[in-house]
Image 1: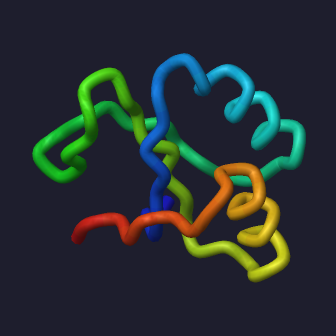
Image 2: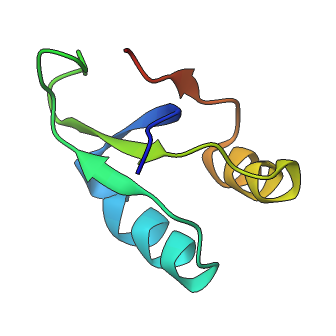
Length: 72
């Protein structure tokens, strides 16, 4: 999967978000902090490929805002 954008979220929110995205059949991966992704302690990243605008709107609403560009 080509990584396009991500959202940083606390571990406590992972279950609900993961289940919702799976039910909507939206592709994603969950990543831990790394050299590439500098996240706040206790956070993980939901990483997405480029999405059709309609699908992106669902993701934007779920995460309450626009995602961050995935670093190259």
